[in-house]
Length: 152
Image (cartoon, rainbow, N blue to C red; front, side, top):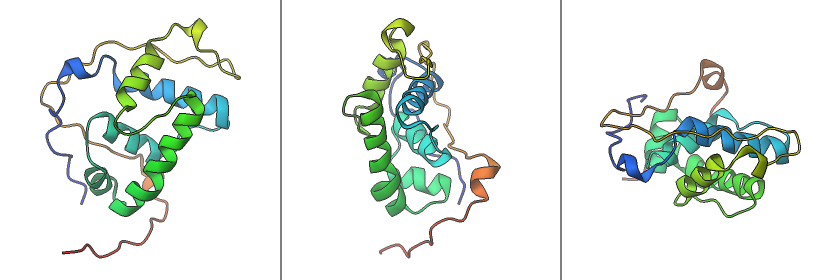
């Protein structure tokens, strides 16, 4: 059930000009500034999986949630939250471009209501290593939606 995600070498290092951690900081700072909350663990897992090019089914398998829950609930709500927080449309397909641009902006050009500013990153060195998506133990202790049988 919690096998590492498949080989993550789908995108070359040139496709992602910043580290995921810098993009996550930019996204979380924007959400905190507009929605007065941090990203939830499951939102971070979906963001990380999408950032590295994984499909919703693969993200669901790794996190232990149903693919339907990730595809039809968490994913769309996350993209809407990021879109409203960043002031431009964010989707699974343009996530890297939007967050790379946002994280690369100088702190003075991306103010927020609470004074938080996104951190800039550096070029990511990916190689062919797997990129597991793990949730902290506190996130795993919560009840999960019931699993539905998979269609044949």
